[in-house]
Image 1 (tube, rainbow, N blue to C red):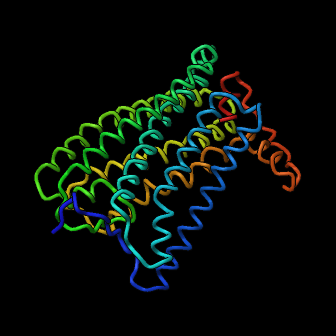
Image 2: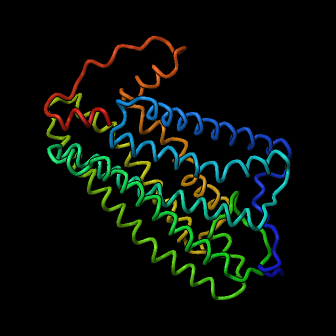
Image 3: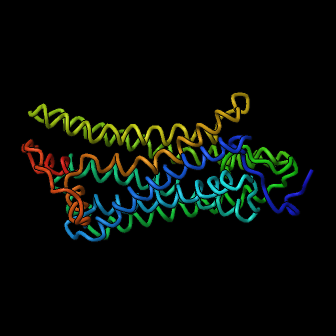
Length: 329
């Protein structure tokens, strides 16, 4: 039994008992981490250095890459260090900082994804109003709202969580400090306050999800009117991965925070947390750039030793200006 006022450290989940498996986890996480750093870093550099990419769509993508870098850098480095050095400890202040940064960055990313869906909706469904409604000032305000909302959300949850008395040990059954696992260490019914807060705060995220789905629904409705079958295929192959990643992000995140204790298990918790905390930051650079020819060209110009630029695809979405914007997305 220990009191939270005297607690100096937590014990994170050990991935394996054998040294070989610990090193395997280290190299696996290192590969994922380096891939995320490379992908997001290239996107940030390409957008910052190419003035042709200084548009609302790429401005939001730039912010998304910063958030992805922050999210994955909050969790994986500590997990890799523990696997490499065969230890499990994290300090009390380090755990609180990890909770704050993770909740801050993930919440801000979710709000930013909502604004990105709105940006695509306006560009494709209402192209005549796009320039007036999404100017540079409006984009800055929306990005600031995403970052500010995430910061406020993180402050409230972090303060509420670490104000609880913790006396059920200090072992956190997760590879990073996660709020639901810390709540299990509470020794009084006051943890129900934080659980209630989590449930109530889930409604804005559900509202954002509904807005995102409605936006993409309108986008798909416009896409189906494109006479070119190849144009439809390109549009769907661009937007559907966005919807899949967003759906996985929300479903696994809400399951991790709101699941009943009766269906909780260490393996299930680990898989679910990995899916919402590690997978999106690692795959977002691929998802949001694999069909973006402008971004590919900017990266080729940025790296002089890359092979010669391949011929662009000859198929173009030529029905309207909005369809041209869709191809760039």
